[in-house]
Length: 239
Image 1 (cartoon, rainbow, N blue to C red):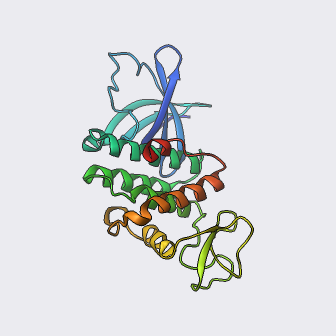
Image 2 (cartoon, rainbow, N blue to C red):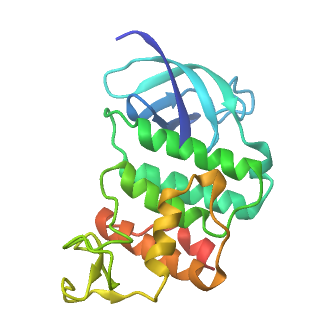
């Protein structure tokens, strides 16, 4: 046990004792980290608002047996413009919930960390792209080894006649490989999903309103199937 430096993005927190809070952060090298911020719930706390969700912070931690203790925290990025826009805050909430669900404590999480950082920076830069959340969900799946087949058949690899999608089978399917329960995809949707999965979050293709809703539905259901849990924050975006 001793002091160590680390950095992370605050995912969430919950009360601990009378005045403390356990802060859950995503770090690139240690995955999720839970650490106690002592006295943070007091108005005189030395941490101020530096440990609020979405904040990218540099930390000094005292390592404990079960929980580390935050002894110093300084802000790297606070994303103030994003926080002033409810639409962007809701999108950020989904991003945080998703990376919280796909990462674990004590394991390297460089790809999910960088994905979340890019997502928050994209939201900070301007209004939310209609397909940003769909693209983020697909990239989150890929970051943990669950990337779905989109513009080719997950069964045989053909790019012809890909008109079905099976969550259990790993993505798009042709008619020959279709499985019970595979849902039909409208013509052009597989290619649209593939473009969202491949594009940088800050440079997504021009949205197609006729596909955006379906793209979010497919990407959401795919990730929820493999996580075996609902992404609760998406209810606000859908509404």
